[in-house]
Every structure is written in C-alpha cells, then in structure tokens.
Figure 1 (tube, rainbow, N blue to C red):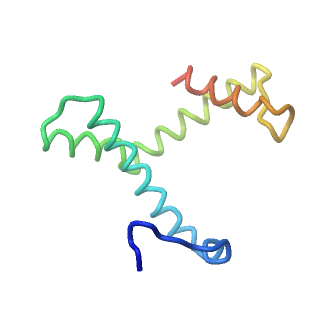
Figure 2 (cartoon, rainbow, N blue to C red):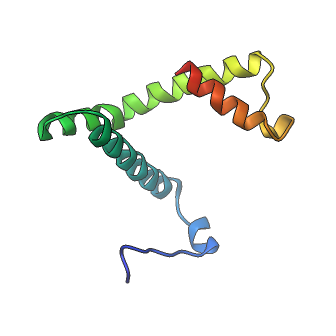
Length: 102
C-alpha cells in the first residue's frame, strides 16, 4: 500500500462512517492550522503546539462554527443568497461576506 498516495473509489468513500469522515476532517484542519501557525507566527516548539491545540480543540471549532453561522445569517439577511437559492455568484458572495465578518 502506498501510504503517501491513498486511493479510494466512490463506493469506498460512500461506505465511510460519519466518525471516520470527521476524523479525516480534523486531520486536514489541524494540518491547515499548523501550516498557518508556522508560516505566520514566530513561536517556540512548545508555544506552537499550544497555539495549534487552542485552535483545533473541539470548543474552538464549535466557536468558529458559530461565528461562521452568524456571518452567513447576516449575509443572507442582507439579501445575499447561496447558489442553491439563486444565482451562480451567491455562494462566492456569501464566502466573501463571511470572511469580511470574521
């Protein structure tokens, strides 16, 4: 097995449990946070680990999700609608509005 280039067909991915997908998602998110911290913050090894744990821990993820949800609600209240409710550009507009709010 090539661990650096894993492959799965659509059927295999469809059989993964929600817990397995969440586990993978947490790994991807942690890698993104680690990369951002390394590139944008001058930290020692210990403080780097602490900063990453602070961002990746479940309470921090829940708080971020609440901020994103509030920003999406605010964008929708201003009349920006996601793609499924109207317009090809709506989802991109919401993404820009959310980033501006955060």
